[in-house]
Image (cartoon, rainbow, N blue to C red; front, side):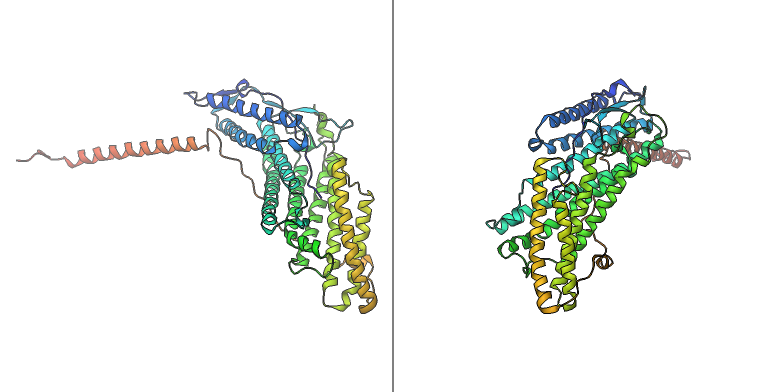
Length: 465
């Protein structure tokens, strides 16, 4: 399954000079305020270009770099405001289009958000979206390389590394979503500046959900990389017995089970804002909106797909076991996986997510897995019917035997970059260090003068006869 494709937002124009006043005696930050305005204008321009560009040609890497340039300036302004070096003569208002909210006409309305925290949260959200989409594009460029019989070992390993790069991007995105949920939105609440009436895109629950989803997407790609060599060997000799290059089967089904847990938890969190609407009236129409159906459907489909794959590999594990008594269990697991994959293929769970090409790709992946399950099921059923003669357990009996999943990857914790100027910046620290050094030198000089004066306390001190 492909990772989720985010619709990127756009933002309105703004000048920090309209509401930021440099209160330092030397107007040390006036030029930096202008530079911050330019950096944000670059962000606005990059988002507009991305919006107008076809999906396959969007330059997510350029957008990531523009955000890398802007965030230190925004951090610098917030640090100076907190210290009092910059005064806000009016409440800053930033306009952003929401892209995760459900709307009657499937539009992305522009809403106005008050506070610097709002722009920080929206910029970081866009950053995480761009990283996720960049990972998606990277994976799409690889194709189904692990099933290419003509690929060389060097080429396969090079594509494995690109796949691992996509995993890293998603782990970074997960860390940013977590940072928004646990830090930025909490600080925004504490500031009391326009924190009510936020859209679902900027709720703690939805960002926590997106963090789990990004991590599950990363784990999905990590599983693919984990199986790439075995997948290539299986093309030459499909089905049982498994190739010698095949990795640990218990690890595989536990990785899939963890994906089920992450996607399921994410969907539950994404549904939360409906029951946590703000009681106070808001001018933003999105404040009472729900998360879009495409995202909720993606989470449900991904959870169901990984559950089916977990059951498939639980069946293979039982079938490959040397214990004859597990022959019937192998058949039961694979029958369960087959039924789940057939339900997904028939569209009962809405696997399409509203995109025709993605629909074909996902249905193709489901069909491939269904064929694979069929091969294993036929083999293990034949063995059980002719050699082991073990009873086939019922589905409810299997439910109690499902183990706990484990993580193959971890989110990368995010921290804001150092401010471009003001408290915490490199220049600010350097000037403070220089000031302390000069002060220490002056103090040492005064002590030396005082010490010399104290030594000359008698008549003729310092004179030689």
